[in-house]
Image (cartoon, rainbow, N blue to C red):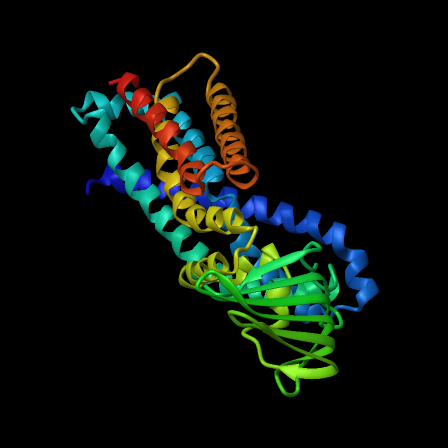
Length: 358
């Protein structure tokens, strides 16, 4: 490592943290102005607003804007170096363009590792308090799944509920079917099911039980009974936000569980899982593009490079949104949808690096 390397690293990181700090302050000001009525109406304590919400709000939004502001920081200070002919001096001293990229890549790698750690370990823990605060003072109770809920609790067991009320933990038109050797062996139906939180079991109203045998069946009916099933009330609710409070291992285990139950939101969860790796990697990709674009002195000065940089960064975000939409709404594989923008822009970055001034 030479003095010029430490100079570039210092400029890179200081510009990035200054930019991300300013945007977080702006976002917080706008967020306060938008939610101040909710805070006052629900009488949210000041301590909870500051420590439970905004203190946990900062790492979430810092990581959300990280690749974008990494790119803007690189374009800004690299353009300034080119405008001051510092890039020409570096290349004229015998340092190759690829060698000059080293401190940029080291800084980008540091930021991408920081982003990976935040996304998979720090932010899920912080989101628990932030989401709890939002549910308590801003959004109210979480939404239930859509009507006609189908779940698979094991290889042989299937559950259906026409609708479920999360506030009262009550389900309507409940059916539980058990198969053996691909044939229906047991069927339980009930007009209503209620969760007994004290005994951790379900209460069934107006139920019918059928056991099917090879040449006959056994029928039992009744007004009320209780039963134990591998289901809890939150299994009937769908909150996409809940993945925000899971670390990578928890999210991976949750996806496996939802695959068994036949969840209809697997694409959303898989996209989130792959984004936690692909998103930090975008920092390195956008850094290569930013340095290659901004290292040449232009007539328009820093403004032209910044405009070009913003255009490319927004193109990247748009591409990412379109590809993930295809994964959620269509049949595109989630890992392809998430990694495709990185792959395409990596090719663009390598091309720009090749034609960059030497």
